[in-house]
Length: 73
Image 1: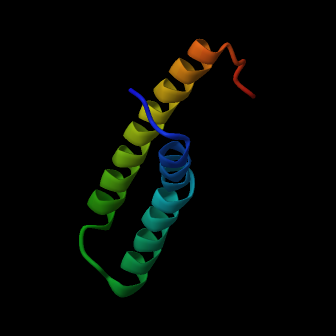
Image 2: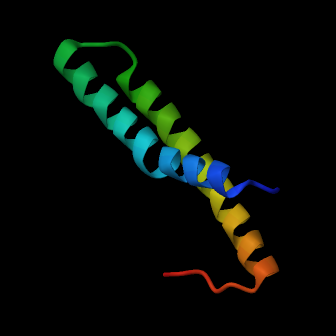
């Protein structure tokens, strides 16, 4: 799987910032306003986020192994 640096950076931002913030926002608003399916929506967002994180981790590991880079801790 090959991603451009820009695509990787965007997807990483989505996985680390946008999706967790979106899930938290919906859960908070749903409990305040009584919106439906809070657990299901947040669970879905979390599952998509975890899947995206795994794909990005695999992509980073492949890139690092091909370029001889050591991943930063």
